[in-house]
Image 1 (tube, rainbow, N blue to C red):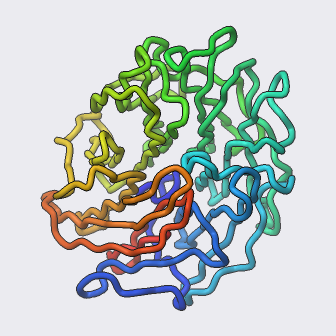
Image 2: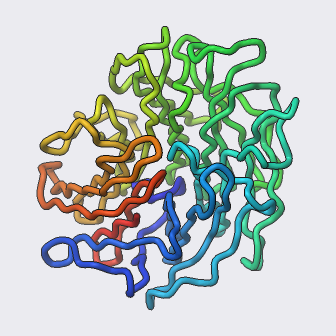
Length: 386
């Protein structure tokens, strides 16, 4: 899973009891609808078992992000608005929503792509990537800050990752100064070493020759060993929309770059990416040509498993999210029928410890601009949030 976010955290039972619906034999999978019409769920579980949920509400072009905790008795805490300026978040395009991570001492970090109303702006009134963190008393979020320090243009897809050593990473993609084409677009990363108090100037993480798909997301994840992983879609020669994995084991000083899969298409597929983690490896999930897939990355050696694809295809599978439980079972969930300004349904496939397909299920009613999220319960079952 992303563990539905970007931090290395332990699983915990997530849910408001009023929203649980058994969805598989022995309740291996349960489903949860976000409260109050929320969309674009993200969630992380900290090391003491608290579940932290981020979601979007309001007008898609300029709405708000909300944070809440889910108690073990199934009740939500009173939601806190994350963005200090009303209307400064955006949900349009699905891949532009907020992202949440848990860092050192359980600190909550949130980053998001700013809306047209967002303040402060980046250099020369450009779109910002905004960041905030929960205050020490967990009563409110700090005033939002723009983290884009370089003069760039066409910014998109802000996301966040954090580790237990106090490092916080915020990533996005944008044109370097003086360029305008997708083939010139780069993935950028800024790093904090003091739990988000300050951030260094961003560095370009992706290779200049790959380009970056303009309206696709960036996946970010920091594992328990402190390695940073990024997933993005290229735009080489405009038509090579391939999936790339970036890995940094030295706190963004250097990155290795690996192409995971080719895809030639002369358009932007509006993709998102997902990460998860087991005790031995990191899981990465993405889509290519209407199909979703995933693989394992050995945390120590970086060796990759074969790509795993769920059975069947509607050629309309998007927005995969992934989780693996202590028994070695893995759940991959994705949307079908979603498109620009169109909702759909959520489907999931459970794989056994040998990555063989097991049970499956689906739920209707994924709202426009939304997607799913998945986490592990303490009993080893899965919970799917939509």
